[in-house]
Image (cartoon, helix red, strand yellow):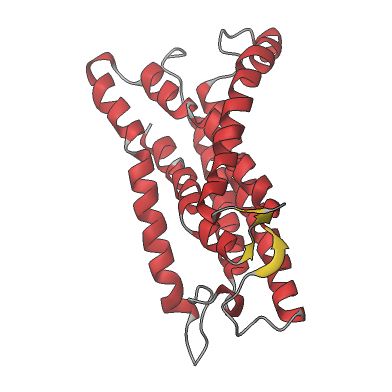
Length: 234
């Protein structure tokens, strides 16, 4: 069970980007929607909307469909839900990387590189990355289900506690990774990937790195999940 838990930590690490680098990215984009200007942090509401919309769709539509094929009450197994959540989290940072690559292209084309100003690219382009991570959250509940179903009866409370601290560990890992990035990228006079002025940086490379790590983590999860022997099967 421990290897499965470890592979889910990176989901929380990607989730934490919604509260940090996604917001930083949004602050250097055009935040005007019509006659209104919205704070970059408030765009996290897209994640909430995604969960509110997709959760009933999953429960009322997808579960009955899956149930016909799998014969299980919940439609799909917890491990399958966890795997889907990792796919969505990977796609989220891929989307963020593509948006940032385009944003930097505009910054270079319009001479904004050395100016700490917003680039004329609508913050609405961030919508997919928030929506995808929200979709991942809908399926990430599989981690709690997994520990509830698979843990020994005498250790169920302890195992469930591990599932709940997954977010905390993932957030600390995110902070650790972000702290390491300048050490390896800001050398020889280079400002690195994450300078104060993102127009001079390469936040897109950070996102691509996270996407690569997420993909490798997904492969590790699949490897562990395929070799996991269910408590029910034993």
